[in-house]
Each structure stands twice: as structure tokens, then as C-alpha cells.
Length: 247
Image 1 (cartoon, helix red, strand yellow):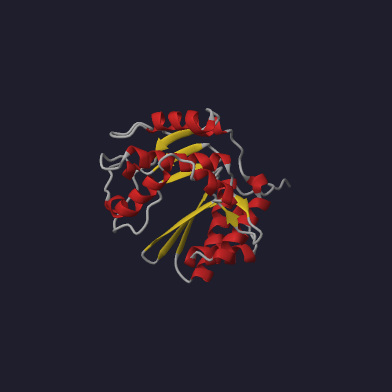
Image 2 (cartoon, rainbow, N blue to C red):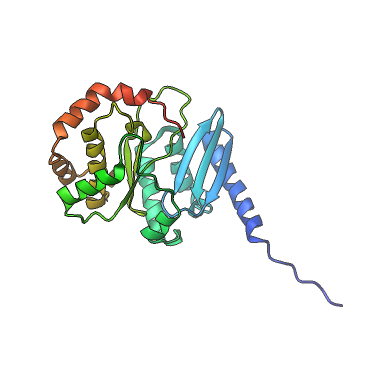
């Protein structure tokens, strides 16, 4: 009598099972509802936000079967930004880099919508002139305004720029594209992010990531309007925090 062999579970079904297990593990440690979305990103391995009582996490699939120690570090980092937990997570990600899908910077940029031309400041022209003046045209990167963030409450801080070493893309906060923001200040922010292309993040003796090593800060002071740009930021930070930008 013929007997039908059991079929293996579908990959998507297994993914749902492991995701639910991960949600339960995090829910126990966070003592709050948790919703996890699994992704295969090549750069950002984890992001999270809290919506009322619910924690929403987007995690790379490397976290699906991670140890209790890693899950606890993840919970500690999400709950209160614990510095030691951040170090443990960085080490975990470094050990599991083999699971990160590799793409060239050019391939990654093809999937992005790059918008360097604003209403008041052309980031492309600013980048090109700084590249020639300070780096002899050697900075191989792209630049764009970042997406307009959703703001429901008054901002207490603002991230004016960022640099992705994977895609080699500089993103500038759209709040800087205002007529009241002087060109030299935008130039300084762009110059700062270009330096991240030169001086990569490294680990200090304490094991923590060092984003701005001493040589980075020394190089930044060579910017022609460094002191004036710093002074403008101190006097006008509230203006940038109150800025409302449309998507």
C-alpha cells in the first residue's frame, strides 16, 4: 500500500513561525506587545518605534534564531538605548555579516530616488565644488535630500545629515532647504558628511563605535567657514527644529 511522504513546510510558513517565536521572546523581556517585521536589507539591520503600548521592530533575518543573550541586548537597547547592549548588538551583527546580501554601491543607488536639487539649495553643485576644493574630486558618492520626516510633536533634536558607507549616499535633512539657511551652513553639513567617506567608523579601546575620531574633527576645522557655521547653528537651531517640510 503506497504511503504519501510528508511535505516539507513552505519557507514562508517557517518564516512566520520563527517571527512569532521572536515576538514572544521580545514580548517577555519588554513586557509589552511586540510586532516584528523581518527584512533582508543590506545596511540597516534593525529599526524600532513605539506606538502607544506597542513596540514595532524591523529586524534583519539574522535575528530570527539568535541567542537569549542577543535577544536580551535587543530588548535593553530598544527599551532605554543601553550603551552596553548596543556594543553587544554590533558584535553580533559583525559575526553574522555572511547573512547580509551583498550589493555594489551603484546597484543600491539605482534603487533609490535621488533628489539633490531643492527650491533654495542645489546639493549637487555644493557637493561638486567641495569635492574639487577639498578632496581633488576623489569622493565617489551621491547626494540627495532625505525624505520629509513625519512630525507630530515639537522636535527636540534634528539629524541634519547622514552618510551610508554601503550605498555611498549622503542624505541632507530637507529643513535645510530654506532661504533663511545660509549656503555656507549647508556647505558645512555636506562637508561633514563627505568626511565620513574618508574616515570610516571604527571601534575604540572600550569596544564602542567611534564615529568622529580625532583626525576627523581636525580635518573638519579646515572648512573655510567652520566658525561662522557653528555660530549660526547655535543661534538658529530652534529655527531648524520648528521647520515644517512637505513630503
